[in-house]
Image 1 (cartoon, one colour):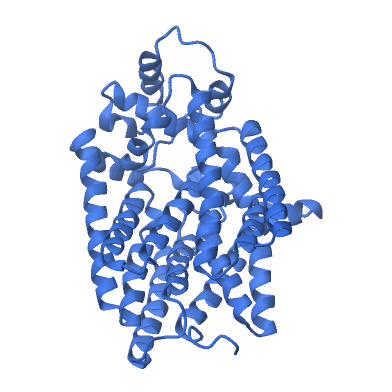
Image 2 (cartoon, rainbow, N blue to C red; image 1 turned 180 degrees about the vertical axis):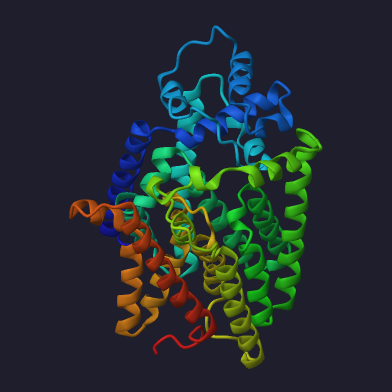
Length: 425
């Protein structure tokens, strides 16, 4: 980069980072409260009891016991706790266990450490994935700043203190390791990171299926073996570690909580759930989740089989790193578009798809592809646009974001299955 570009990147990055830090200071920290609270409860031996459906009163007492009943008041903690009349402890045991370092005695210290790490993972994830997709460092900085300043899903993730920025950085690290020239050892490590991420937050689960399937379709036998074995090892470790560190029945308690949770009451579209499946259910319609997922899996699976049978035995023109980002994006979008619960901040995980499309546009794509990609990006970032035009409405936000997600899904899949090698069609 030239000196001018370096200075521009520096100023833009500082501005976006300052904006994110300011948003963190003004955020509610509602979701982070659970990430901070549950490790304290584990520390006093609560174990599977954290998932009791009617245990909020008892958990408050146990938390006071863990902190010491004469603990000083904490305005950040009190603000976050004020949103919870009934605790909704639904994240996985591994999630709470790995977030234990943020369960500091005073809430604010852990909260700001968590937010700072999340902002770093957002910038690092966008820059890393952007480079794998062929974007320059300057383009990556612009993309990270755009996500921070313009995407409501990112703003929501910062505001409530959720995990999706951490996951973005986590996934980017796995993709970066899998792209290393000496892929043998790093492929196993990358797969292990993806397997652990799926136990940390199940939204990554479909990625663990799509990535090996994509490797098979490309004919990358060794990468398939390495990454699949890493994924299996990561999943096994992710299940066993909480059982050894907390309690042998912790996963059963989590599954029981998930099955008994009143999703219809606590995950409504009006509250920020941008799931079309939930929208249909709220209006008395059928549960479209499994049929949609089956349809998506069938389309992706058949497409990859066809691609495998037609692939050229010669080395392919496109970078395998770029295609890996596309496969990861397909797995993440498949969850976002078929799940009953997809909070606004979950769409932080649509960013890999948009970076993948941006990289393809730079290589040369027809006007319709560019227009469709930009439309998908605007739809996913839509809420600030709607607010600016006084059209802000939860149903409209949901509809626009879901439409943008499907457009992005179709474009990424098209590139993986049809247009991976030619770059000027």
